[in-house]
Amino acid sequence: MREILVTGGCGYIGSHTCANLADSETRVIIIDNLINSDIRVLDRIQSISRCEIVFYKCDIRDKNELRKVFSKHSIDAVIHFAALKSVADSINSALEYYDNNVNGTIVLLNVMEEYNCKKIIFSSSATVYGKPKNLPIKEDFPISATNPYGYSKIFIEQILEDLYKSDQLWRIAILRYFNPIGAHKSGLIGENPSGIPSNIVPFITQVLVGRLPKLKIFGSDYDTKDGTGVRDYIHVMDLADGHIKALEYLNNNSELLTLNLGTGEGYSVLDLVNMFENISGQKIPYIFCDRRKGDIDKSFTDPQKAQNKILWKCRFGLEDMCRDSLNWQNKNPNGFS
Image 1 (cartoon, rainbow, N blue to C red):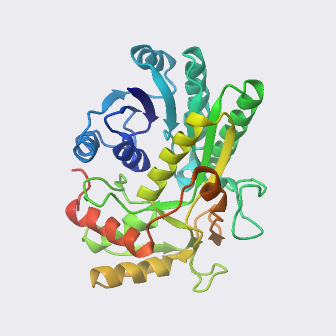
Image 2 (cartoon, helix red, strand yellow):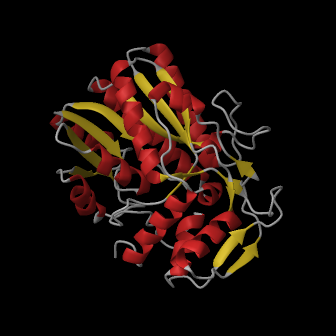
């Protein structure tokens, strides 16, 4: 049985990937410090996969604890999600973001090398493209950033590129994904932010279930069709499938692979609001607020390279994403509490 280590596996994208990854031939091992996640998600992942998940409460910056995990298992590959991920918070807490995201990844890579585990899928972000001059975004576009979160992803990508150049026994996939939304169709797991959500969809769904009084839309003067920001929203289950397809590819190919994961379609914030209103039959009260630092007007990808290289393609549209997000929130109005 192969053993796959998933860092940050109790988080939003990590939990959905683990639910899809666990099977009779794969033992999933999760490490998570639970700063931005909930231990109660483990039982739900196991209910979906019907497989036992091995869990260690561990911070990726703790080399000794990581060594204990690697010494207990014959880990074949690592899927690396563990990171702080708020654009706004990164501007106010830059050192914390660099320490957790960049330093944590270096510690992880060092321990992987010690135990001769040289296969990793890295959770990067479309944020690395900064403010693109052209759309749709392709993998060979210049990279830059407008905030420390984005720079932390760029720095890690550079580290992985240099690592591969120094030792081509490494098999590395860098997945730059766009805006994940949605939830598992069972409603057992979904996006469960702590405090007031920084992402648009959980903000909308919490308004719809009465947890929040009204939606705050940050920016109404972007260069878009309705003045609100446009993003490439991707169903989290499509994203989870992308990680599994990338892992299958690395099992047969030794290379440094960089892919965009998105639908190739751009939708505005008001498009989302309208879709949720149609699905729920409720009006969503909202107000416009000032733009957030670091946000850009538009971002959507060309997903062709992922389709060609790892035979991956999105299966779900915007209506599916919104319906599954609302299903999760209706079944769990207070998250995992």
